[in-house]
Length: 269
Image 1: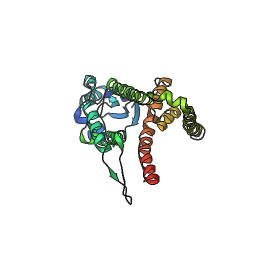
Image 2: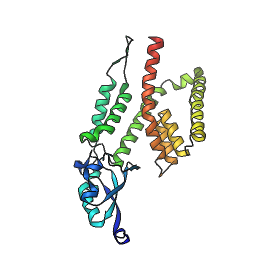
Image 3: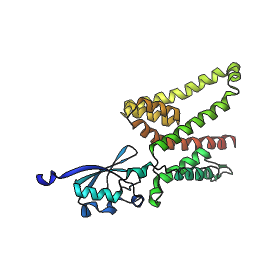
């Protein structure tokens, strides 16, 4: 009725109780116990449909609709203590890196060939991170990290990567250019730009993706973290580029790790 609807409120509630991590929305029986409903779940800036089978994770923001007293009881159930989220949960990150390194150096046999290949440090860490992100909450593993800790790890990793790349390439850079290396630069430019132009045109014209999604897609297709940083600077306040990058990057990285070794095995083995 109209009188009842006047008493309904909408409130954003944060999941901060570890006991709620990894549980499905249906397990809380909100409608029968609290007469309240979760309409949306925001996770890492992305709005998710609040289906009964959705598994909640620590740090999720819930949009709850109901009577003021009922919504308050829901808030107590999920915690809603934002100070708990300020603690950087870095243990799963370093655990994932350790397991990723072990997986990356593990030789994987190829059926029918007397050869093995390895995922490498990056490929192994990526696979483990995907598995932890997908199945970690089911085993009460807290995968939430504060935005500041997340950005710190990203920037430190990007800085170390670029520094190591520069130190490795800088020693012979000038000699290579003087010896005709500018032709290799030209070839690299063509090999890089032609596929990107084709993908960009197809994504924009045929798939009807907007500009921010296209630049995120291209950055992910190149597995270029510096390109993502530039794309994010163009789309400030908009996570579409980051979402597309995160969607494409794992598959592209896995293919690069696999394809490079398989080509060497098949043609040079």
